[in-house]
Length: 126
Length: 180
Image (cartoon, rainbow over all chains, first blue to last red):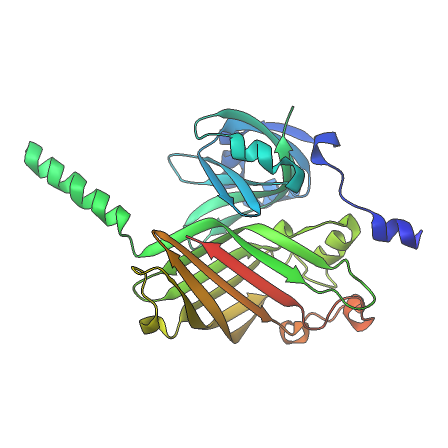
């Protein structure tokens, strides 16, 4: 039992059944309208988000994809799982994509003065 | 009229190009609280918001606690629970401060500059003054800020049973990298 706990790992997100499927603009709006309720509903849930790539931020060990509301600058950011970073790096700004990941949290950034929603362990929804 | 509009567009474009406040939404924080009896409590947050004002040296970071990704799901749950980071109550960790030896850094000349950073770190709802060494790497238009330091969990009111049992380091190491 102890061995099982120590060797337990998060599954590849591709293999995990999604709790919700949403469109990016409506998803952002839901957080903007009631951050507390949206966090309660979506935090730590596996969600498929359909939307348009607005920005790609790639560094040595990072491949993050963003979907941004052009009016408010509120955004969703998806940090890709190690094994799926190649897919993220092939995306281009303007691409219509479907991304599956674990929704971490939504919050208001005092630095950027806008709402944002973070995802971890993401993969392309195929 | 056309000339005025062109002038305004030029001013706007140059202003954006040479903006002093740089921001990123993909800074990373690596957190390592492993001990000799538990190698699992380490995680990475790749969606940290950071800013750097190249004129004043002011820096700021915002990290969502739930964005720290652990390889082990149980440890991730423990990390977010009340005995540790209590992310429901304290969802965000922040740093606000500045490079105190900014005069030694030239943002227009490629190089690796040693910097001293002073500021206030807020974790678990507790704010403490911190001071650490770091580097600023300038390469063309790219600026990379990095720092490694450690925090005493007790200073931030984190003293859950896992800490007491030696499964979580009392003084985890933290590595921060922001590329602007």
